[in-house]
Image (cartoon, rainbow, N blue to C red; front, side):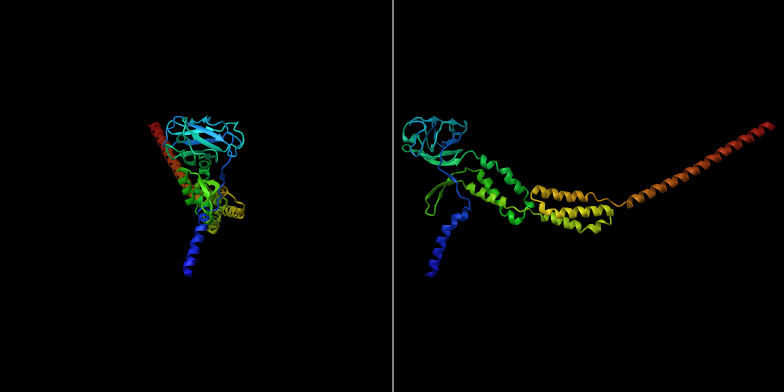
Length: 342
């Protein structure tokens, strides 16, 4: 019996706290509010085929209508391909206007929506019923997703730089981003928050709000993985003696000094771009190592040997030319003597 009671208490406790687990720490902040000049209100007719679409606006506190019923403003069709209409709240809307009815140009309950509380700009009310006797019901969804799509590049940039953050701080960021993109490609339906008794609290949310909240929580607590730079520097410092075999002592010492400076400056790095730049500095400093002149000296020695051989060859050639020249002169003298005495 005690075990049954304990199990029942556990289940009740789990059910009670489960919403907070599923919904993280985000608190719904959308609620019934007054519209302002310039707000955009949309109507999605769904399967209905209204010839004309109008919007009637009034104040829930009884302070007045924007236009006396049944007068209303006509809405503008967004495109020929969609049965979606838009209304931009005019400058003279006045105060406290927070209720709307969408209606066809015809009379009768079946040609209008139920009374709707205005929540926020850029939402569309989608009619999902098709009653012939009652007002049409449906739900609100976010039509203009700019507030979320404008965050995509920023959100993806953290994913692209995943390696530059510690694994612990990065957590399940990839999963949240995948969820965010999936939700963004779906209809963002406005949901009503419920209390522990499943009653409406008067506040509303989108499921994507919770996902974005969790994403922002991770972003605000990301920790740079500076060990990428520190480990690279320590590996290079461990090779200093090895580098002295192949590079000049001066260039190796300069490289070591550069590594020490970069290591001392690690604490000042506070962005991914700075971390990347410091890692690049290690590579550039290494490229400044200067090879010893051993190979060059050997090359010069070979050049000098070739030059000496060339000189010898030239001298030998000069001697041959002198001999030939002497023979020619000797032969000329003999020929002259012979001719003279004959």
